[in-house]
Image 1 (cartoon, rainbow, N blue to C red):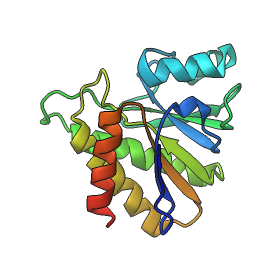
Image 2: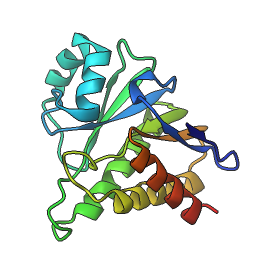
Image 3: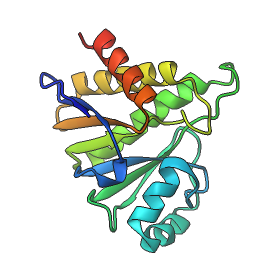
Length: 177
């Protein structure tokens, strides 16, 4: 499913982020950057062993930070790895750290001349960040960036489940009528 919003080129897609033909995809990584479950594992499997070798050289990543690697066997030229916060009830700066993930990923698009990027629902899987709150933070950060920076041509949110797709769609409609 695709939900286009042509006035600002923010898109919503339900599917497999590893199959998207964009300049960069975002990996919801763990601190080691060496692969794991969910989106992280799928990206590592699809990109191939060269990704693991490059990630070893990066020596990890802190929560809220972002690092970039080549895309290797993916259709995307780049992978931007970011470590989202683990939800611990909301009083450990989780919202601030998730917003920082999006800001740092978007900053890397400027530095690396990336025109199209796709984001998964960072921290909403095994890290248990509430989906509705995560979607609001993601869309607010992307929209704010979009207003100030004009180098990106397209930003895509990619969800895997029907529930996540519907939540993101509702939040997009509420925040970008």
